[in-house]
Image 1 (cartoon, rainbow, N blue to C red):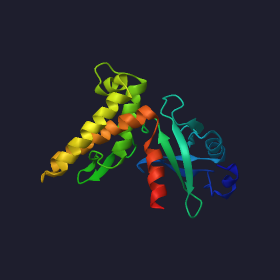
Image 2: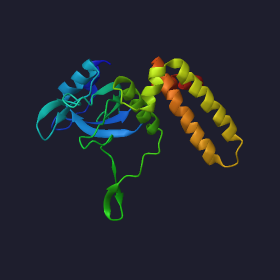
Image 3: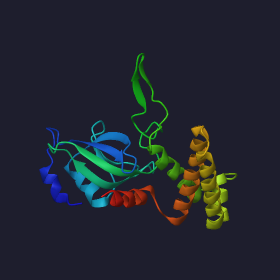
Image 4: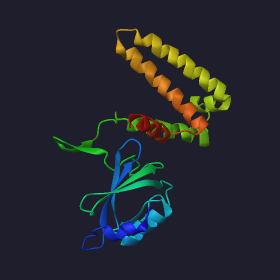
Amino acid sequence: MNEAIIEQIKFDDKGLVPAIAQDHISGEILMLAYMNRDTLAETIRTGKAVYWSRSRQERWMKGEHSGNLQHVKEILVDCDCDALILKIEQIGNACHTGNHTCFYRTVGESGLEEAKADHSLAVLQKVYQVIEGRRDNPVEGSYTNYLFEKGIDKQLKKVGEESAEVIIASKNPDVSELQYEASDLLYHLMVVLVERGLTWEDLCRELDGRRK
């Protein structure tokens, strides 16, 4: 990313521009913050999201103290050059409340309500991150850790078994069984992806190349 783009950004009268952080794979909106010239330049230079705090009037790198860093994959600029979208890889949670996204509430009839459970494709990325976490920080009694301990042969055996279960379930008129078995297959496939160092981004890039 080239810092020369900064000269084309239209900062407001306080020298700020809104920046939306969006998961680079799932497209989930995670948070909204602001940047000035210096923090945008630092973000471009380091590849880590750095913002300007309007309340504290100081620079802050997301995750600098909590560890919930945001690795910037791409920066999008809107048509008026006065708003940014950061396509990021979020480490941990984006929201200081402990929620994955700052947008965890919805407008209901009685006011603000907890948003319904996430049923979007963002769940796949979240499960992948949990599996990565189990690999890096084993938890006693975890089935995922058991699969990592047994190694790739055991993992591939499970993928084969779950694939067969998907085939059998697909013949059943009741799709709930297919839903269950397909979810098992995706989980075990993700274990293999983590084991071999492939990400959803790698798969999306491959599929997007085929689409084109």
